[in-house]
Structure formats: structure tokens, C-alpha cells
Length: 369
Image (tube, rainbow, N blue to C red; front, side):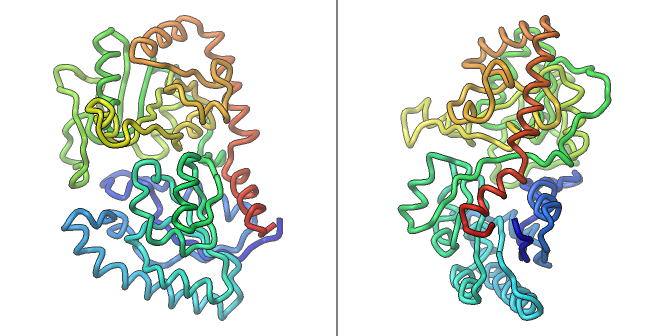
């Protein structure tokens, strides 16, 4: 496709509350891929860290911040885009924004300049309410949750189904000893702790890293974050704090089995109580990160994910804590089979699930090719 002049606006990480940890996953996946595709990128020169730490107007403390921040961000965005567009026409405004980031009329003003606008957002499975206001003001919304497409359309927005992916320049196998039986890198919330506790109770040697698995004053959890920490007497040395990006990817290579979990937030509690919309599951960035990094991946059975990897041949699905434990024991003792699946998953990720694949398809759907 032809090179585009793109004004890019996003925080550098999906985890802006991480303190003391080097995380640049959105920059590595989104910005670096667009640049590697040959597009001319102008990055929004604004520190969005605090903006992305205050996204929910239902929380009074965050609502106060949003009221003052949103106009400031919008004014800075207007000034920078107008200057860049006057210097040389911008083809595309690409953002990862929530309602809290920008005023809808600012998006309308960008479109009035003749610039195509698109927003990438991957939390709509359980936080759709955080983009309801701005979504109809974009030309396009890139949506990785298939079941939310109708909800976007009901708002008057124009969604394009665009699943998560991984950048192979960042996610790659490391030549390190495979010295971990089972591991998980991610926060301790939802039904994850119950699964990990089940594995530990079944004498499975699992290690976990991320916010909530142990108390560590260097890595305080974000306010209002519903983390659930396993007791030290249960985890022993199994729990650790957050890893930086490189150490996370190296852990995928170090692990004989990498785990994934699919529940969104605390929605499993709704299912247990029979209230709300019940448990919500979604495809995650990790579902592509691990295979792209050359790791063997085991994750909860999900129909949508089976459209991207062949279960039992490229990744492995589990259906319950007992099923997970049984399959872990099986694959730990069947190294040849585990290795075939690991290599096949890596090949599929490289062949079909890079961000370049996603952007080429999305831009074609937007008529930008």
C-alpha cells in the first residue's frame, strides 16, 4: 500500500499504572509496526501517563481529573495537528483513546480538515462504556471483540473487526535455558488466582509474575484495582512482581508451558451470582504474544480464538481447573508433542498474526490502500 502520513496519539503502554517497570507494549506493537510499514508518523507530543491513569468518570477522583484534563489534551491535539497538517497534509489520525482522553468536537474538527480518523481500542469486552461518547465521532473504530461490533453500530459508529496481534521484531524466541515448567505473566485478578491455587494444591510447579501475586512496595497496585493476592503460605516462592517487556518475553522462552486466562475483570463473579451479563471472555494480546515469542501456549477454550490457531496443533485449550492440571501433566511428560505444537504455533503467528497483517487488512477496508 502507499505510504501514509499518520498523526499518532496513544500512551506508550497498556499498563500506565506500572511504576518502576519498563513497559512500552503499545509503542512496540502499534507505532513501531506502522513505522516499519513505511508510513510517515508524527507522534502526539504530550505526556499521557496521568490521562491513562484516570479513565473512569464513575470514580469521583478520576472524574475531577478528567474534567480539567480533557480540554487541555484536546487543545494540544488541535494545535499540533493543525501545524503538522499545514506543513504537509495528514492522511490519517490514528489513536488509542478513551472518552476521558479527548472531546468529541475535537475529533469532528480533525475530520473537518479532511483527515481520516480511526481509533484502536481493546477493552470494549467489559469496558465499552469508556468509549461510548467518542466512538461515533471517528470515521472508523478498530474492534478486536467480535461480539461488540453490533454495539458500536448501534451508537452510530463504524467498526472494523481487527483482532489483536504481535510484532515479531519485539516478540521473538530467546536462546535461554527452558528452566520453568509452567508460568503465567499478568495481574492477579478475576478467576486467575483460583486456577493458580488449584495448580499449586496439585503439586504443579507453576510460577507467576505481575501485580497482586505478592505484596511488594516497589510495585503498588493502582487505586481501585480489584487485585486478589494469594496468601504467601500458598504461593511460597511462586509469586513475583511485574516484569519488564524483555523479561516477560524471555519468560515465554524459559517456560515449557505458558498459561493464558480469558475472563475479563471480575465478570466471573456476576456469573457466580447470576447477575449482570455473566462472565465475559475475550481474545487477548497474550494469545498472540506467546506463540509469536516461540512459547508453548495453553489457554481457556474459546471459539473466537480457534479461528486464529488450531487447537491441539498450534496451541492447547483447557476447559476447567482439573482439565488444565491434567493437560499440564500430559504435556510436561510428552516433550516431542509439546515441541511440535510450540513450533506450529510460532509458524502460524509469523505467517498470519503480525500487526502488519492487521493494519494492511484494516487500511484496505478503510479505502486507504
